[in-house]
Image (cartoon, rainbow, N blue to C red; front, top):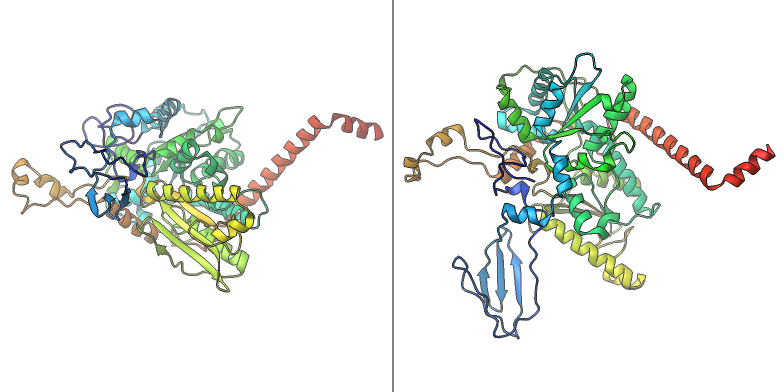
Length: 548
């Protein structure tokens, strides 16, 4: 579901279900990896049969055990005794991808066809004057950063030009998902505190739920991990609720009179929007009708002949957008939503009275795994981690399963001795995290599969002819790596917005709408409770009516 499509008359790439090739880039690696069955021992006569491209085989003896190590650069090395051999990376073709069903099912692929720029154009064209329909686009800060990097603009310029572009196409409102992210963060910090204090029957560590790729992977392959995943909606789906519920109510509109589009850095957001969880059970109206990737927006600019850099800068829509009185954007720090930092600072303040100003991370064997902890009186009371990319996710899941198994089959005393506690103060060790920010893409959301890919500079691209390839010593194309681009996006992202207090939204509209939502949620729960009482206790109700 993350392959290329060639558009007519150009080389633009985006999500498509036709004209596919076998290319998978860094931010689009397969979430369902090739599984290698390990054997403790091999018979002395066993010899691997290599292909011509492979190195000479290693012969394992009954007295030697083979092991595989993963180097920091991603190279796999097989070691048998003192012998070492670099293993060739497994390649996955499109046929393999379609056969494994690890990413999407056939039903899900049908839903993806409803999540495309073509569907967006069709909806715009089908609009009838006076039909009362509203078109709303919500833009993620990661997508803004991707477009800003492509056109050498700052974040605020990009945001204003996007408003000009979308309104020229018939869109009525353009919102900012940094606004809805505040709600997701508020729900996350509240849920974590409840888990930590054991006020709810949900285990620690708490794993973030904002990445649909990670959630889909867990649902399909690690069902026993699901209780650890946060119940908070992602910013995309929170914005969908705000648009189709709160905003529709304010305007006197029905949810089906609003067509809501989200611009996201990730293809998996299309699947998230299509989930039955996020649509009305009676009307089948989805909270988010269509999801466009950053790359698809780039394609739309090209298709309409729009010179994005030359577009006028429109005023920012202050409704559902984190913009201050001076017109500057603001939001929580963190290129993938800031969940770890926000929850950590909030928990440190609320649980232990500690105001954490600077986060001091310890980086693991690769830059996509980091840890941070809080010590009180020499005891590690908070232990958080950031795990980006499949390799780190697998390590977290493996440790989590070992922890849960130990908790099940051992006594509480034995578990404590092993350092495998369920949570709470005093937990320590690599397998006793309280909170993990999980993202499927290496380098996080800024390097999502839907982001605009790095390209060679225009000057370099024009010099790469057949003649110059032979003399590459004098002409070297400047092509930015995906990792370097993600780093540059991170700088752009944080330079483009003023960071908020980690656990106190500065936008007064956030608290106002959040209070409204909590009241509505409580009212709905009370109605459901009353309905259950009426169904379960008819005799008691008759007795009460008779007494009255």
